[in-house]
Image 1 (cartoon, rainbow, N blue to C red):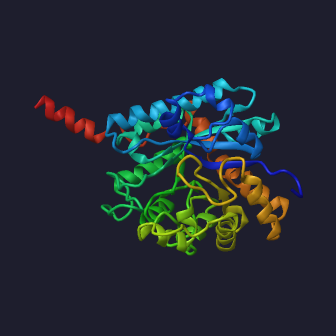
Image 2 (cartoon, rainbow, N blue to C red; image 1 turned 120 degrees about the horizontal axis):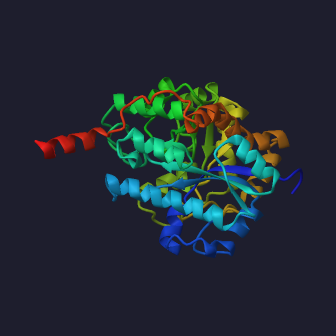
Length: 367
């Protein structure tokens, strides 16, 4: 490969839940190849991964407090993973942590919560997750929740509810990035109107290239860029081409239309064209979907994408921006808030610690 090696900080990897299913949350096996997974330490090294936001996701079959417990198990997995491999991994909260890890040749390991339902309706739970290291939260997963509409479910709020806006304000206050993957366009626009900090989209493509509800409309891509945020393009085939999306929605009859490295590059090019190079990022979604594009089978494959982008005229500076500098810049905009929160200097919380649903249940039992 020509040019310098580009280290990627990927916005979304579901190893935590996948390891629950495949390894029973074991971490010792990950020092060697694990064929049932997209991710292990040898392939992370081969792919030049410099940092990873490890997604902590909980299946919504779990409800209420079960979601909180499941999230804590996922967070525990990430901490145990990092502790098991201190020579290869470094736990990270801030951009400075990531840059230090990269200088040491270790993979900066961040935590991202993939679904606002996982806080159980309580800002106190959100704050505790932040204290444990969570630096972003996706406002919804695939279902509409009590305070925000999802892109892949019926709308109930027209975007964010009043409490949803309060969640956004509290995330700003404590330095947790707002992630607009999975949410309805109305929720995206409400969050952008409410936030005072740049946002991310951890793993969504461009709606203009593939009409999948998980993808982002051009006006939102432009607004994210104008506010200093980043859209991190996934490798999920059904998000990338209309032919693959249509094949899936009509029942997967016949051979799947091919999807390859160039299709991911098309989405990166589109985000760049709409919002600027500063708004481009990568959030592959490894171990979060069964099938990946040809040439991008697992976490060792990022160099193939960078070679494709070089062939399209992207400079090494452009590639570094998309691979890690942009997301680090977004983190840096909220790092002082997060550090002030951890030090007890962030001011008063925007809401009482008691979740409304819990308060209602307590009152009902006492009456």
